[in-house]
Length: 147
Image (cartoon, rainbow, N blue to C red):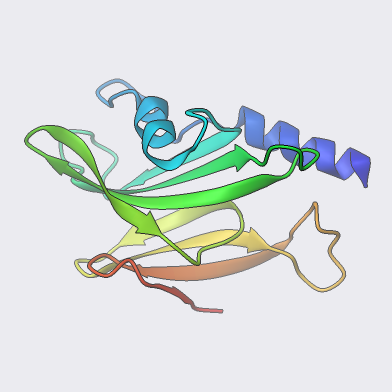
């Protein structure tokens, strides 16, 4: 179990912010500054509505921050971001979305869907394997678990 936990932590630490490319702002500063208590995190994910930073105008940010005194456990913080004439702005937290390895995001005019891994039957707490699809309403930030 300790080995699985270490593998999960290593995966989180080596997973880069997906949009960390030329043209994007300092996404870690943006995400950590708006969604963490400490200003730093174990891992973060940036899921914009377009790959091109000149076209993207909405994004979901996910941050995994270490829980002090919790032996390597992390908490999840999810937020919506919008691009304005002043740059990327935090639009608000999304409550009720859980899991690891957020991916496969898809935006529509009213919502965004994404997948995370949740514990499946007989999974140890450290190593979730069950893909779970979520829908976030872009106006209310309400979360719905789809499966």
